[in-house]
Image (tube, rainbow, N blue to C red; front, side):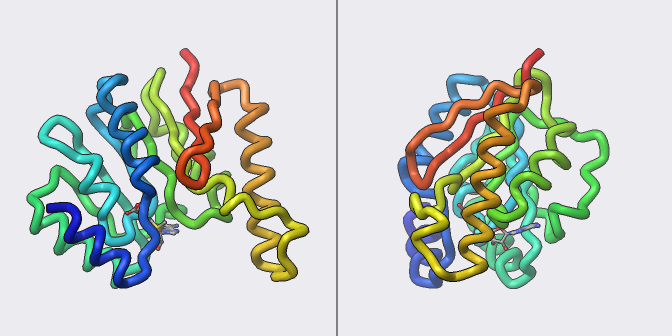
Length: 186
Ligand SMILES: C[S@@+](CC[C@H](N)C(=O)[O-])C[C@H]1O[C@@H](n2cnc3c(N)ncnc32)[C@H](O)[C@@H]1O
């Protein structure tokens, strides 16, 4: 059934999680007994609906109202265990809610800001997963486009931040477009 939503995203050129990354995340959720997820960057809801189940609740946030309204329709259609917030993740206040897993899949240039803002919403031993960390393996020297160079540099700085962060134990995986899994130490 989810193939309908996937095809709809592809038809509308909406970027979605790769099959490989999705399979990894589902396996991670099962093995680590994840019950609550916060996702930053809903788009049309494909990853949120795919990761949710009767046992696993997903809170997801999308700032683009056109995309969020589309996601709302699909979440309702699939009766998914998902709560959608139509808001900007950089300013939204989630109070004292905490999650087993935070999935960062919003604007790539803002990953560090998302990470720093949302780490307080993670349970001890929980994980923050970030997608698209390698930006198609492009290097700064591969492009003349200033915005792209800037983005590649920012993602590099974010990876260095994760590598050296002592609060979290981070593993980088070359699946999809590059995933990081950062476990909050006890
Ligand atoms: C790569 S897409 C998400 C794909 C989705 N997770 C999936 O796999 O089906 C990134 C989305 O993040 C949204 N986004 C970017 N910055 C955001 C922010 N500050 N707050 C909320 N959503 C944001 C964009 O509008 C875009 O729809």
